[in-house]
Image (cartoon, rainbow, N blue to C red):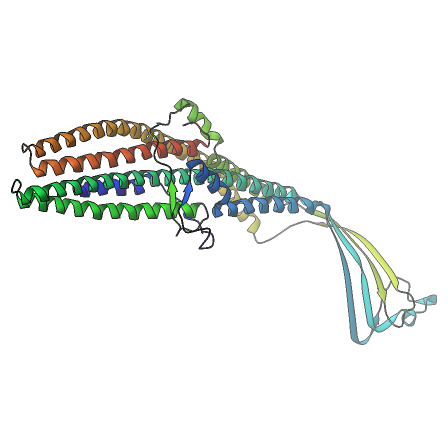
Length: 451
């Protein structure tokens, strides 16, 4: 029976903590040696503020915004300053030939020649028409920003769920440890009474040995539950970005049962606005923009360019200025068929992304139905566990009276005490399961609909 109690206790750490995250912790040895006491509200608030995983996504979201801003500003072109110095084996013309070199112009000899030359000035480039490439790149960057924001929002709900589930698991394990403490104390009293009764010859020595065996087994199982509690506490601290080696104390379990405040049909309608479905829609829109970008590779581009250059050399008095403005048109004709293959690949990705929206919607809907079923099941288990605790406590009390009166056996008494401890462990698990299932619903619909 004691093994059954430990199975219930171990299930608390495994069943209540559904995929808890373990991000990197802060530097070891932070603040004091005593346990860190946290309320549930404090744990959730600190997880949302200090969780390293959320900080990573937050910086990525800001980076996506800046990238989108950088791409959108490419339409204003670019201006560069340049400078070059050269020394050649023979004298070269300092500036491009721009005059008639025959006749009265003086010929080649009148041109500025020098082996040492400096050229400096400014150049600009302005895109006039790129077939939609720049506008689609800008839109893709904006969509990436929206996707990063949606991912951050969804992860915040997941971190909040992890914080609640870990905190609840710690509460439940504390309750199980308290139940073991009570069982050990009861068995020790029974052993003390039996030792006296054995010396007086009123009970056989075998009864005392059975109690000692059960007592030592209960102590060992209590340590196993404490180990589970230490693991859950370390995971909770890691989620908060704290040193996992520190101890954490949580509030005792509350008897209040969360209630679903919305109709399940209303929740189903809310799923289309959740971050997972939004991310799928954003991904589909990105694929559509990629198709437009691939189509733009077939269109011509028009770019305006120009520069202002000062050409200087030791043999030249004042620097010689030159400038030019160019409007170039580039028409793509042949690239080995690569553009057609790229366009078809983009269209296939677009079709896949459209199905991805439906897949995301169905997955979230299935998760919601599972969470609602778990919530109903947890509430039913809680009602049964409360009734079981009352019955087991009464049965243990009666068996204690019967044994002391000589009408019952030590096996009956030990079984009753074990059933009482098991019932209390099941109650702790059921209470935690209800809270965790409620928070799971909130994390799926990304709204406080169960409180």
